[in-house]
Amino acid sequence: MSLLNYFKRIENPAPEPKSNDKKHSLEDENTDNNKKLKTENFPLKKELVPAHLALEKKYMAEDWYKAFRQEMMKGYFIKIKKTLEKEKKAGAIIFPEEKDMYTFTKCPLKQVRVVIIGQDPYHGVGQAHGLCFSVKKGVPQPPSLINIFRELKDDLGKDFEIPKHGNLEGWTKQGVLLLNASLSVRKGEAGSHANIGWQQFTDAIISYINHCRRNVVFLLWGAYAQKKREKY
Image 1: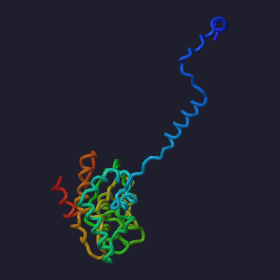
Image 2: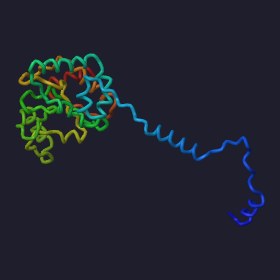
Image 3: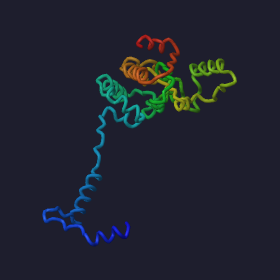
């Protein structure tokens, strides 16, 4: 501010506020701040998770859970969960373990570039872990996986080294979705859960990716997987 303007303000002081002007006191300011704090600190409502989706909420990747929550609210999916619960109560051993059932969702939906479709999880002890054709490290490679590695070696030659293990989880980080048509199986009974409703759910997943993602390659290995092509 220049000295000239400064002295003009002294000579012509600002008029006193009129009596009907609203005065803002320190008490009013504190009250406003308290209201603001109460509003900001108000706890957000927690999402209500349906009882039958507790497992999905816990083990399914968040982007997948949000994308398919409405699908999983449908009657057929509720029936799937009831069937699994009933079999467990009857003493059936179901693979994969609950914590591994949705391992395939580690491949983010927005990063899916390749979809490999299998039939159902391996039904041997310690094999299935939520990724088609894959087994955990330390578990012998099943014949189907050995054949896959051989084909890759034949195609890629020196550019592909056959792994000493059968865990394909690293592929999920490269945009490869390893999806079984059925997501569970009874111990020692191949295809035992093929007709409990999983097909409808995995069809919904395939349809979602087919319509919402571009430039995705679908690999239909085997006659069973190739039947999926007829729907799309």
